[in-house]
Image (cartoon, rainbow, N blue to C red; front, side):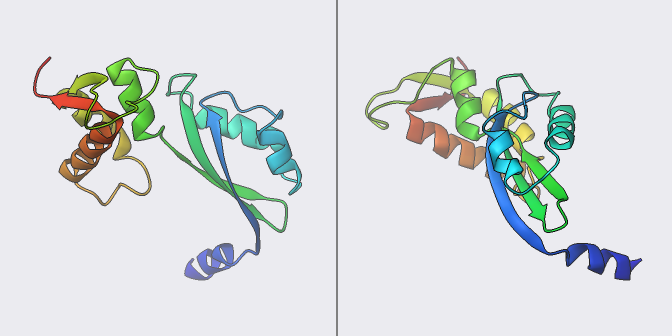
Amino acid sequence: MSILKDVAIRRPVSATIRLTVPAGAARPAPPVGPALGQYRLNLMAFCKDFNARTQKYKPDAPMAVTITAFKDNTFEFTVKSPSVTWYLKKAAGIESGSTRPGHIVVSSITLKHVYEIAKLKQTDPGSQHMSIEAICKSIIGTANSMGIQVVKEL
């Protein structure tokens, strides 16, 4: 079993492609088509699999996807949930952050919002080892840098 696992890891990689695609809206048109087409990857297989994996998210959610293309024209991909800034903007009900963070407060959110975002982000590949408290602190820092005030209750 371990020999098969080692062989799978050693497949020659031709490229690593990073894209931001709306959840459930992957189509063979740009930006997905040209990015995958140049490595002769199966566009329809990627679109179907990506759309199936992201159907639990809102349709307009920007999903970060990292595609590993192998020399034998196969691929693997990982999908991350939308960015913390996207979640913060949605929770605060704003289009963009403050032009002068620290001076101008554009909106405020509660600690409950922060905790909910942290629970969603905890499933991401890079955040699985972090405690919920550490993720919350990171989100509060991001909110402060966007000019969003975090309060106990609204």
